[in-house]
Image (cartoon, rainbow, N blue to C red; front, side, top):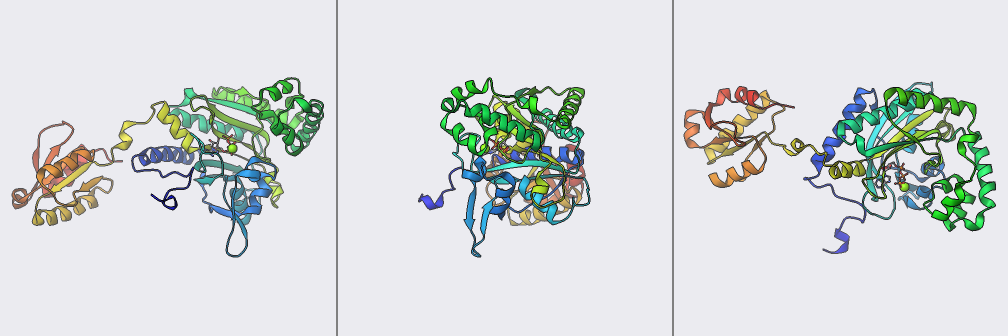
Length: 429
Ligand code: ATP
Ligand code: MG
């Protein structure tokens, strides 16, 4: 195949054999978020580039080197969204749905785009489900976001494989004081820092804390600690969060080096990490961003949220073999018909049955074929039952009903009684 006919590197097709798992995952999360009172919001995939520069921050990895930015035909600079928070904040401001101090508990799902080096668990188009909550400033809502993800891990059967890491970044004032102290300390050890950290020291010094470089890590051992610079309000908030997690029985570890890649966080930051996926171990990450809405031109509005990476969570489900078998069975009944007259009758009958059983997953054979070939297709479809209609059955206005997975004998059912019969043997979703 010529190159132009291939998908772009790092952007994946999700094939029919994989979509049941995606839908299982997505519907599990959607139901959970409904149950906790979150409402879905859908934003465009493309926004003005300025939005991301202003919200995520000019000196972050995303804005510096990962964005898909292009000029449209009007000459505007547009960007494929690299994350959801910026667009969500833009949307709530634009529609004035937080401006009077109203609480909004929102969630979104969709593709995000970052020009990174593709590898397992890291792609250029990937998918996130995220939550954003506005106008609640207490630790109770930070806790709720964590509690609901913990419940999700339980529902998915992956609780034992993920660990919660927590930190508090304080307010922008306390973080400013800490940043000064850190820069002063690191500047005195400049020659021992790796090149990247030397650069970050000037642009975004807190990010030096999450360096992977061993020499820089050694220097950091004696560096000033963020916790010693926390203001009282942030300290009380953090204690309140920890008390709630303790009350809910959710284990966590404090990671003082957890700083997150985006500029807009304050107070609480957290990550759910796993050691089962190699280097791409963070499956869900979030935190509080009390200054962001104001920074983007709105009234001061507290905010807190998270985003989870769907690909990584799906990889984790597969790695841990926590994929329920039944999600792949998508046909209840497969109808085989032989000859033109039977095909016509089968179509009319199956539409009647669908009227009565709207959730029945009935597949009707297309493309005719011998008894043997239709039966093979019925079996391959995963259906629990085959329905068989030939001239003999048609003459008697009955249809053959054959269990395909070894539950009972074949029998004939009158056309009129078919829906009622199916209703007794198939559990409908
Ligand atoms: P990482 O440190 O792995 O690059 P990040 O801090 O850039 O992650 P966030 O911006 O916090 O990630 O995004 C939230 C979640 O989205 C991540 O924890 C991860 O699960 C997922 N994610 C981020 N980037 C990618 C990607 N390129 N491919 C797949 N999933 C991703
Ligand atoms: Mg990243």
